[in-house]
Length: 127
Length: 435
Image (cartoon, rainbow over all chains, first blue to last red; front, side, top):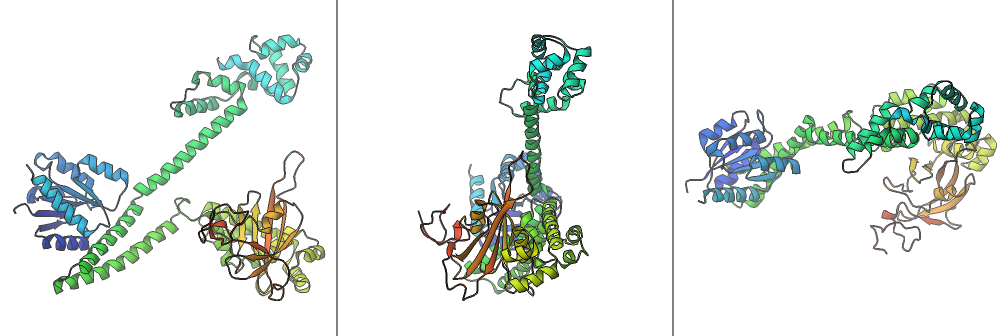
């Protein structure tokens, strides 16, 4: 399968390590990036099949990154799984309006993340 | 109706407040009652000498009658109507409302201002939770670390075969993250405790004040000798961080100071030594009223009153104003206490001392001597109803005293009381299924 490439934009090194382990074990190629400021450029450059995006990042918020991604024509349908420590309904609404594919609050379960990644990529691959 | 055409309405209002009949006022200003009646119903314009005469008799400035309610009041009424949204109010008649019913208009305006103030508080709190950058960052730090720990721990627990290098790495991560979580949690709690930006995130002010009293053993040598004032003590107590807590502490310490002045420590201690903690005998000996004696007994340190004494003071609503815990007698931290306490019986018998031997259920077999009295908060005038406070001194009973007599069985609060079939029960106990 060619579409097994995940970009993890997260500034918490041990979360990166855990998610990298989980997804790599499932056969995904995982790349990580920790800074929000140039995250959109990194996505454009790497062209992953899915982005896992933290809400609070140094440089630029996950919400702003999501909005910018959705404004780029060929990234408008890129699956984005947003992780956040803020589970308020308002944040969830904002993320949905900005075009998030799935919203998940920290702390999350490993199985939840793996399943979400698998499902979102499968949905996006369907013609 | 324009404001300046409501002079007659204001005259009628003021006359009514002054307790004058229409005929009396008319006679004093030299016009007929029927003419005054027309004026009061805004059917005759009024000004000049007649207006000045009426104002003089009514004891107000003439402008009070011509200008009536302040523009600000009318503006507030309009604002209240606008804020009410869907409610159809006659906003074009706000002037008339303010002119004809100034008291009610002021009440409405006051309520509107109060609502606005409360709304601002709610917004501030909500905003603080949502946008306080430090709070948000602290919570994010705590939850992100918890997420890392949960994820890593799950991997270790759920993966049967894991590369030793990964296992070592995850163990190290867990160790680091758990330490970080401990530190960030402590920092978060410290921030919530120390931040003085608002009092709402603090504990209940009365609890803050109680913690301060308890830390001092409910005894204040500086106030006993007069070397310190309540303000000195409150200023020197950083733990009284909130304005409300400082106010409560100051009020209590002021009362303490007055009691200490009326019943100096040496004299009181000598009488206590001779008579024991018998409020009646102490009151007669020292010429003091019983509430002051109860408070003074509770303020004695252990070296003067071995075994100590508890004290509860409540207002007429049953709300606890002060509590000093005596070991073994549980005083609820939240919610209303047991209505069977002599404290509340005393409320139904103002100024009559009530004494009961008490067993508190659910706390073993400790017995107590409870002495209560209620008294008016201040000397009342004939024009106002008295408001009563009630106090109950709780003394431990010696084993031999506890052997004889009838004991009143009380609880702490309904929620934690094991007593079945209690006529005073307000809600089911969490200890037993009842009802």
